[in-house]
Image (cartoon, rainbow, N blue to C red; front, top):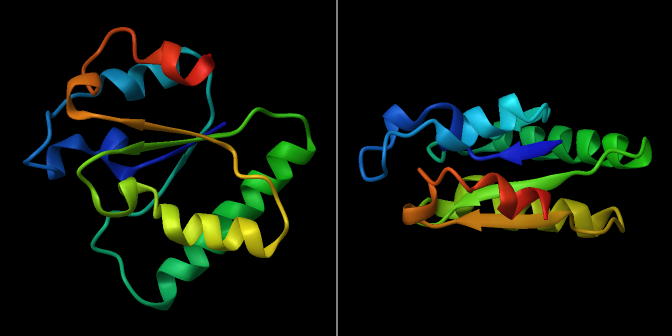
Length: 119
């Protein structure tokens, strides 16, 4: 189960990054479930609700034996996954932080990106 930045599903709305769907396609074709985080422009109480709901899912999937990881992007606030907010909620619940993979610009179109999150 991958908690991913909005960028991976909607790269076209990030003009400063490559408009590549390579990583999304690798996740999809690899059979990974995807929990998409909101666009970085989301602010206010709605964001905290989204974070709480995401951590609910992370906790449930982890309890059921699924491997869960966080997949973010350098160059997007909060790595595109609202990393500080996720960490705070995870810590508040006493959970372990899932493996985090943060891709750089050069990795966003890499045909080998999948090896970073299945290793």
